Image (cartoon, rainbow, N blue to C red; front, top):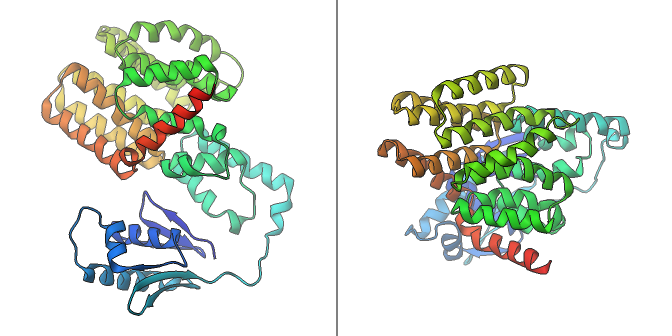
Length: 383
């Protein structure tokens, strides 16, 4: 039996069954699952699952009891009590392994890849994850790119840092996107410029960083003039075949640049109308959410607090619906740094700053920040 643990939703899936857990139940099960076959005392489990908290040993027993009850539908899984010591998770391996025949059908593989491409294009991260979870049932081999990308979609920084089965070159760009969310945009800009200078990224990722991601970093680092200069290259590139889906996100980034620079409302209104036309033609969820962020920040500039909050909340809801965890965090990153620069209503600023910190904490960003910096330092200094 194969299990999938969906950290963002505290769910466990297996044998076409999905089980919802409470956060601490999920954390306890996740630890036991990663260390299945090993036995842990109650004290060890308290230390691993409840750090900096002060629960009693009975807390572990209660959570184990509830886990056993909820997971009883999954055959072959057992949380054993090791008398006098603690608990151990065991899983029964299937005696016969059968492969779905369509796994060897080349046309089927190409069709499934095309479905992933469409979901990716429209920003339907949840659809991508659902499809990935049904891989065995549907009988297909996931495209190598998407086998990595789904971890990025889920905000699984720990996997991207530690996945030994995938070369660091394949993970580096995703790790860079998460690294941008941590700390001063000026320092992140310096790092990204260094990466571009040394040509560390794979060519398609280098191009994307060069024409898109760098625009926001220039803006948030207080250098919108450089962003406008770089836009000249961006507009040239997105005219090329294969880059047409970059047009809406480029238009949104351009609007954010002008918003930061204090461009007059009349010009921003023209940009907004152009973006709305683009999004009617290409209703990509990530871009719809990003556009609502831009509109919300525009309202902040006009001190329309209620309308701003409504738009920003709608943006976060759209991005939550999309299932693209990095895009929701990126939205909060934009909001918080815009607020830091232009100081809107303090209560509203604090609301989104708290949401931003909560998201980073839940994804383990602070815990993994040092490891992330070490990876980048090793790669950059090696070149």
